[in-house]
Amino acid sequence: DRSLKIAPSILSADFANFGMECAAIEAQGADWVHVDVMDGHFVPNITFGPATCAAIRPHIKGVMDVHLMIAPVDPYIDAFAQAGADVITAHVEAGPHIHRTLQAIRGAGAKAGVALNPGTPASAVEYLLDMVDLVCVMTVNPGFGGQKFIHSQVEKVRQLRAMIGDRPIHIEIDGGVDPTTAPLVAAAGADVLVAGSAVFRGGSVTNPAPYGENIRAI
Ligand code: DX5
Ligand code: ZN
Image (cartoon, rainbow, N blue to C red; front, side):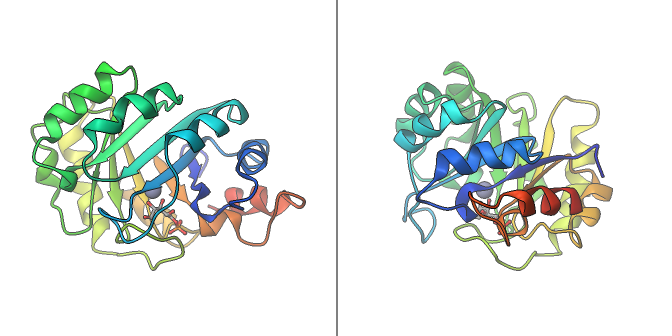
């Protein structure tokens, strides 16, 4: 479905060649590049930080979509904005002051996203709709790629689409997206699909063609 934006997650990329991988997925049709920042505290995995975002920025022509799976968030917002993040998404569960965090993200010049873990209801964003440009629905428990899609979240997508109405807010789906699950969330109202393992499988920086085939299959 080409009305959807595909945002490959570099969590599933070759960690020794991020710049080349970003260029390769864009050349193969990626709309956004999804950057999964993890701190080993909010989620049980550690990935990379602002320095990596700054390093890959010159290799990304389009949107660098930074997903912060960290707590606290506020002390790091400026560093990610200065690294060139176009979208900075914070988890509603990462602290007690999500409204202030979203204000700070927009204040730093980035578009603001809010992410909901599978156990968090859609109503959590009820008083945030004037503060966000994107709502990210986690369809796995955050921390790792290659996990199984959590089907209960499709109803949450439908609820969010109804709440958002005609506001210019993206609904992004993150986790377990592949050719089987993508149609479910697209029908429910999602317009940006993150995919890691489903995009990177079978390819490499020296053989990126499978990336394009995988993206088109979604
Ligand atoms: C999980 C990350 C997701 C993950 C998606 O914590 O937020 O972006 O990389 O990977 P797949 O598409 O393999 O589930
Ligand atoms: Zn993510």
